[in-house]
Length: 83
Ligand SMILES: [Zn+2]
Ligand SMILES: [Zn+2]
Image (tube, rainbow, N blue to C red):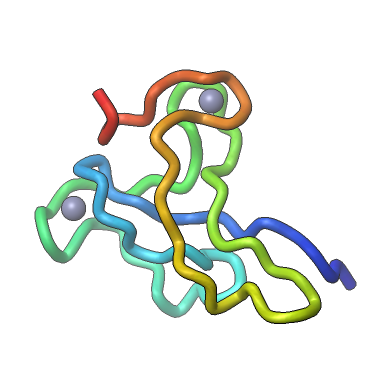
């Protein structure tokens, strides 16, 4: 079992964080944003790398504050909410 890993975040195209733990807590996933109605994505639209969500470690961090990323960590492209 993985002890430390990044969950995958689900964020709408307008930048609302829908679920920072879409793998760990899939019950909170939504296909569309309930605040603006835009589609929700879990991966970079340029390179398909998963959007980093909450970092899980064996001590505590699963409840840490989550700040959505502005740019893809894999290809460096701005996410839709950054443009
Ligand atoms: Zn939204
Ligand atoms: Zn990317």
